[in-house]
Image 1 (cartoon, rainbow, N blue to C red):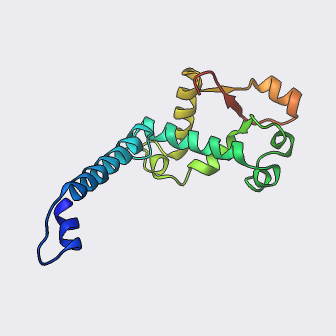
Image 2: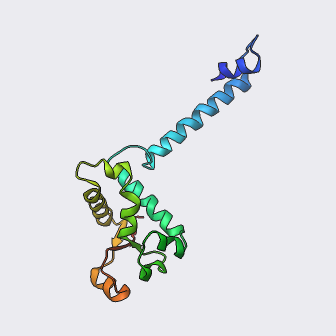
Image 3: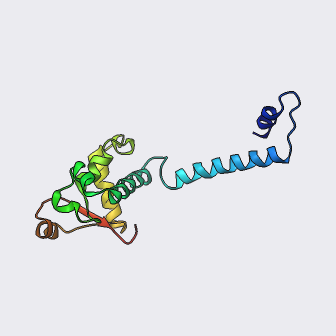
Length: 150
C-alpha cells in the first residue's frame, strides 16, 4: 500500500517515507478492524449467529420507527403505540427475504421459529403470554419484548 502511495506521489522516483508507511499501516489496520467487527456482530457469516443478528437488526429498526411506519409494516393497531412490544408478523416480514432464513435447509418459517425460540430461551427476547396478549391487546398473535440478555 505504501509503495502504491509513493508511486502516486512521485511516479518517476517513488520513495516510501515515514508518512507513506504510516498511512499504509493505518489503512490496513482500519480495514481489518472493519471486517472483524462485521464478523463479530454477525453481519457476515451464516448459521444461528447470522440469524440472531438479522432478528436483532429488525427489532432495533422497529424501535426507531414512528407509529405510521409501524402500521405500514402491518403491525397490529393495538400494539403500535407500545414502544417495546414487537409483533411476530413484523419480524417475519423483515426476515423472510433474508438469505440467512431463505437458504435454511428447514425453510424460512421454521428457521425463524427456531431462532426466536433460542433467543427466548437465552433471555434475549421474552414472548408475552397468549392470555396477556388477548386481555391487554385483544388480539391472537405472538408478541415479544426484549429480555435481560438483549
